[in-house]
Length: 359
Image (cartoon, rainbow, N blue to C red):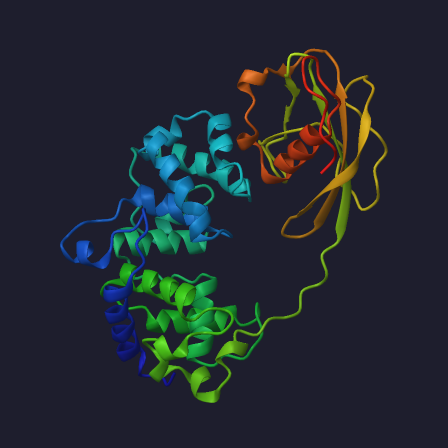
């Protein structure tokens, strides 16, 4: 895009958004916004935290459940940590859930109102530059520069920025700032997100449908699908671990809550070893006749692949979670995989039919 065309491109983008804006449970659409309906800052903040590293499709039901159970920031602030972590299970990146509670409690302690500027929002626990800018723009119409992965892609193509990521980030932020209008900055931010998610997609961008294609330097050069360029990532390492699933005769299960800090912090899971670069030594949580399963659990995190060997046993002891209080849905995804494998391959429990074969 040539310098000086930012206003025209922005106007074309907003016209497209007025007609094509995605309907989302946390969003106030452009027609309602024009009629004076204001977004709920709590909804905007909650959705932005949930959407980090996660898709809109995955977040919709989580958002509805959260807002039904905790309708406002004060309700969330008063919630028990374990209840929030259980509702979050499956969304991943569990530090977000811990920071969600810290932030809600900070807002509640300050009177229950979110700061209305990106600078003020940055002072809250767990809110970084992107989230602060998004909430300030969408909820309070501050002309903050909102740059997520979708926006980076749109801007890289509009200006044909060929510097690989992440080195290109400062240039992309600068150009996104030039494009951000003082009028309707919240709608502009959401329009950029929608454009990147639905038309200016990572592969096979639909340039023929793009409202700003006439301004796009990458389209003119025939390189839109190649941008933004990325520095090759190193191959993910593999880590190994052990997980122990103990069944009580009455159907209870032995669980533990992981430390607050670290991966899966604060989440329920099964006892086991650390995750290391080599297979760890056995470390059962209690004395029992442990049986190793012939299959293993495989799971991929952001920075590494994980392979877990699973052991099962039927035993008795203290600290078992009663069957009536255990819900696999409250476990993080990797622990649900452990449970599914263990339940399928477990030894027969008292009163049970023979155990099914391994999966």
